[in-house]
Image 1 (spheres, rainbow, N blue to C red):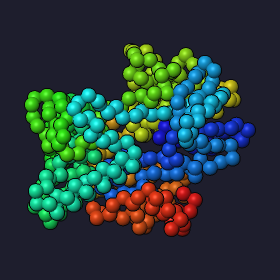
Image 2 (cartoon, one colour; image 1 turned 30 degrees about the horizontal axis):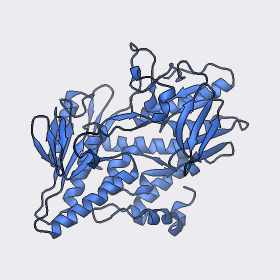
Image 3 (cartoon, rainbow, N blue to C red; image 1 turned 60 degrees about the vertical axis):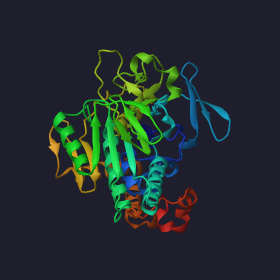
Length: 418
């Protein structure tokens, strides 16, 4: 979200003489906070926004390519498009917002069974797998029940476990099958960085939805259909979902060091320390020095705010001005278990219950408004409620990629300009 926010802000404030190139591997901006909802039935049109339309402007170009390496000494970036072609792009000012990638562990038995949840395709694939397992369990008398283990009890992990439990129950409704969903967290409690009271409330809400929460446990081995924990406990798991740690993008190697956990030291104006005309936002940024506090978290709201400020500081640099320091405003943490049940935690430590669902929808609408304006916000809501492919429910399966790409042609009035 940091990179898109920076590009959209530059589109608004950059002089027409300045040329802006946006490089991104995907053609879509994925609303990652909505991925758990995609498991429950949201289709791609409510989770992904087309970058080509969001960045439409005369002085902005969009290049769909993978960033291979950054060479700040020569002011160049190596990118790879379809195939094996590697191109070199020269820059005058660089904004780095590559984010993180899933740090899926290896070397634990059948670790290849771990399914990362990082994109809409991952969420859709998990939904399809659960639907197939449910059909098999209902048709075969000797079929094993649905058993899913979610590894990682952070923000996304708790929402994913709740979404999987709700979908599994809906898929086997009317059959004598009890789905088994387990959430594993290696720390002493889920959401270890939040208050203990909020963690207990989230744990209780998960258990009320049939999720088994195991905190303070580590996975010792991954078997064919089970997990072995460090205390010898066996956890049934025909499906494994990874929502745990992340690692830096490989292309950041020239800008970062191991002493900062892979994050690039930046000044309070988000400029990379020791490099000329390089700004860093989102997951990739960290203040310089081991004693300095980390003023921004790895969250969508912080990344979006950092991206907008980085764009303004880039424009200030063009005008010969110093720019402004980053002073983030902490946003409430909102955990959604279903559209009507959302728990929130304010930066001051107050727990929100009644107003949390409205706040969550308002926060997402605010972000969509900022990146795409009224047209994109209206299109997202129209797609969510009116698009035939976006009707939610356990009986609706994600359409094939071919059908997904044909939807704008079949329903042009709903998809025009978005």
